Image (cartoon, rainbow, N blue to C red; front, side, top):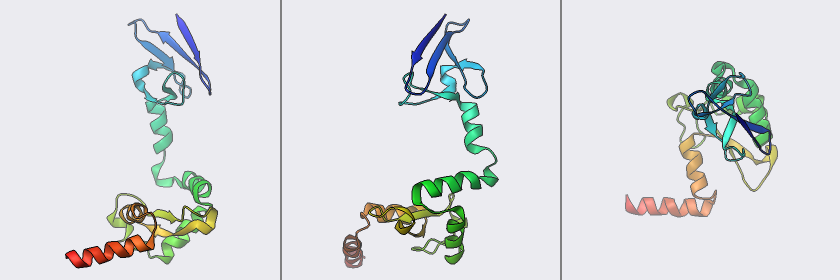
Length: 158
């Protein structure tokens, strides 16, 4: 017995398995799997992704060593820069966070692209920061006066 729910992207087909639990086919591997084998997706009418967790993880983490194609696309879409631009900034900064000067090797993730939210594209990019320093700037709303006040506060109370 199959029930089809038409979502904004594609129809979601639920099929009752022999055990009586709802299953659906994975769009990538074609296997019918339990709904627990799919990540949630609020934007889909059925509330689940169309790709099973196994296939999604393979897609996301495939060839982690060479994710340059994905990174290049992400940097171009989000910041208007290429992976070559990122690599150039990385070399110019010696692989270190611009603010705290700690090398990327010390962190679990790559250096973040810091950008001015008021500008768009390549002109918005300021440099590369570690996650903590990038979040710190964001917490102070990229406002130099707030940062100066925070410095005065720390100097007074240390």
